[in-house]
Length: 355
Image (cartoon, rainbow, N blue to C red; front, side, top):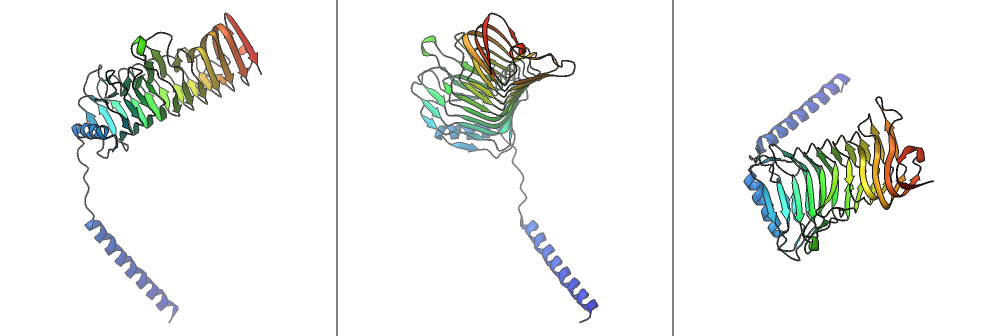
């Protein structure tokens, strides 16, 4: 066979294969159903969420974005393991125009003694306020006789609420936030509050935060509070989280905190971290053009502060003006690889140890 005939034969075979493939592809598309996503009904979302909380199961929401026309409040009154919701990228829009109501409240009533809610999860979505609403999600257990614990918030973007993005109140402990961003809320990105009667105070503890951002909130990125002054939560461990342009401190840990590691603080109000009594900071960095002159502002009452591998940087006219910390009261500051005493503004009876 001549070279020309071989080329023609090859071309004919290739064309036949292409036509056959085109016919199969066309048949496949013609047989495929046309999927039209249903219009998401907020009542359907609420009913589905309540049903899963009734059985202790996880809602795998695939109904798309939901506009909440009323707040959702769920009371848990029996022991439960593992409820929650995977939003699968959906956006929950709180649009009921009431700054006194939360978008979602999960509560163990104080009257429901010895109730345990364990392993709850909220993940993979966006929660925003389309009109005034108080908090995006509030976990409430204002008693030490019941417990919400081992909970997880993962891969969430929360913003635009009148008060807080996320609010944790009372016996809400051993919880984790992974890749959670809270922005543009009227007060704090997150609030952790010891709450309940003085003789039955619910304590927030063993909190771990990994990654995420707390930015442009009206007060602090994260704030600790207590119904009893000076008994605020302090068992917070925060890693690789970024605090930026909050109107108040990036992190306001009134009674101190267990640890902040690899966190960044930029242009928050007053300071990156405001605390009392105790704190341990590892490889934290801060930068500012002037609104945040210190990484840390602390008052120690026979307490101690560790600064290990921490750095600060001024820019845009604030070069060489930012300092590591402003510290008053009585206590010990230990500095490792964080400069020397000249990087601190001190008052009171503060001892400084550098290594």
